[in-house]
Length: 122
Image 1 (cartoon, rainbow, N blue to C red):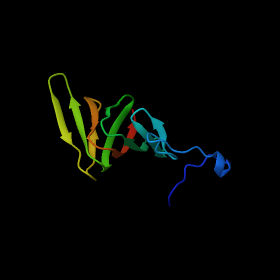
Image 2 (cartoon, one colour):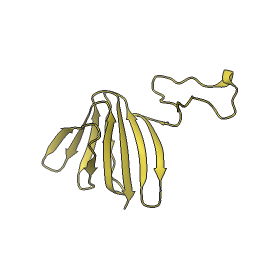
Image 3 (cartoon, helix red, strand yellow):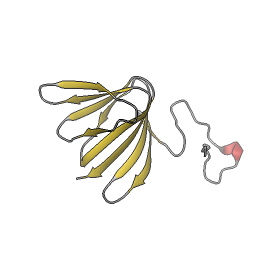
Image 4 (cartoon, rainbow, N blue to C red):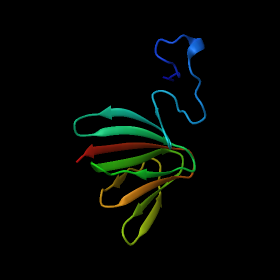
């Protein structure tokens, strides 16, 4: 079912149009694109992230463990850094990648990217 960018209880003439950087409801606008929290429980959170082409997004592991990302659209590179090394891997569609809190990570969006992100709190 397609969603429309509709302000709650607003007549059609008062609905705000989506801009090129706004993915519209149910996405919340972020500096890199948008995010949608689609499931949350006591032991996990699940989000859909949409990242604009050319964005370099730091993947935060603060207060998180058991984090997994999965590319669902576009082309992106996951960069993993430690004290002595940088490893870059192009993400494959529908191939989950575990992210540990032992390294620093960054997503490099080669095109517009959509990701599923699931993590549990520490």
